[in-house]
Length: 112
Image 1: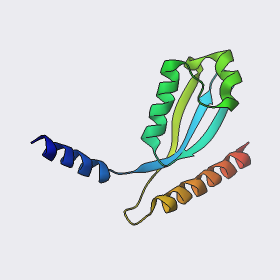
Image 2: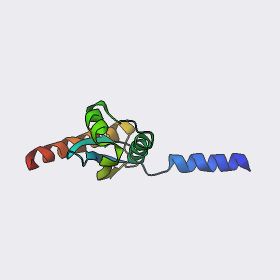
Image 3: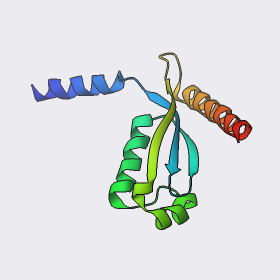
Image 4: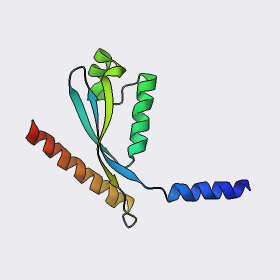
């Protein structure tokens, strides 16, 4: 019975929807923000929550703000999500997410 459950769990994992996209980590203490892309949105959100829970800075470029304003000043916001298509390879999906990041960065430059 346990082997069947493991097999079902593996199958469910393989068939899950893979969601990537663009997210922003922002510091409301100084209004700085960092826009990033990921092919695993839930994983990125979980990592960010881990950094908050352990008071560990997620990136070297944020450390000054992190030390000055603390974890409570930081937020993780999903800007845009993209589902991996069944016909896409991991590489194709990654390239699409990178292109989406470039579009978001261009949009940010024109709105500043």
